[in-house]
Length: 156
Image (tube, rainbow, N blue to C red; front, top):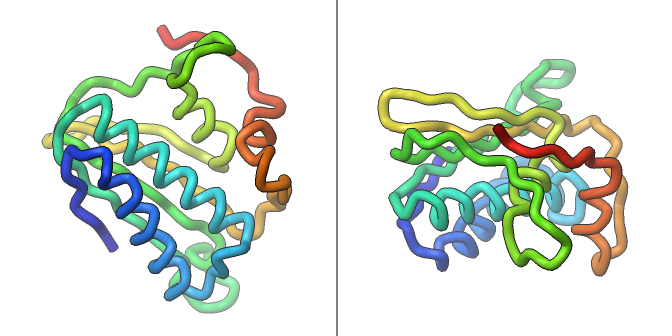
C-alpha cells in the first residue's frame, strides 16, 4: 500500500488518516499501542520529508497479511521515499527548541529503523513488531514517555 505525498504540510494529516484507515482494515485496532506508535511515526517521517526536502514523497505501509505463525504477521513496516539524496540528520536540540526531535522519536518508538539511498533519492524506514510490549502512557505524556531512556548523541 502506498500514498503519494505532495510537498505541503497539510499532507501530514492526510497521511495519518490514511494510515489509520489501513490499520483498521488489517485488524489492528486504533487503540492498540502499536497503532498509536505507527501513526506517530507516520506523522514524523512525512513531516521530515515535507519540511526538509520540499519535494513529493511516497509513504508505504506493509501490514501483517500472513497466516498464523508467519513472520509477516508480527512486523509492520513503514517507509517514506523522497527524491532528495541528502542523508537524514539526527539532531540533539536543547530543551527550548521547537523542532529537531523527529528522528529521536523514531529511534525511541520503532523496533528498527534506518535509511538507504536509491536511484531516485532515499528511503527512510522503520519497523514495529506487533508482539513487542509497548507501554501505554497517559495521553498527556505520550511524547515524554517516548523519550525515556534515549541516549543523546550528535550526528556526524
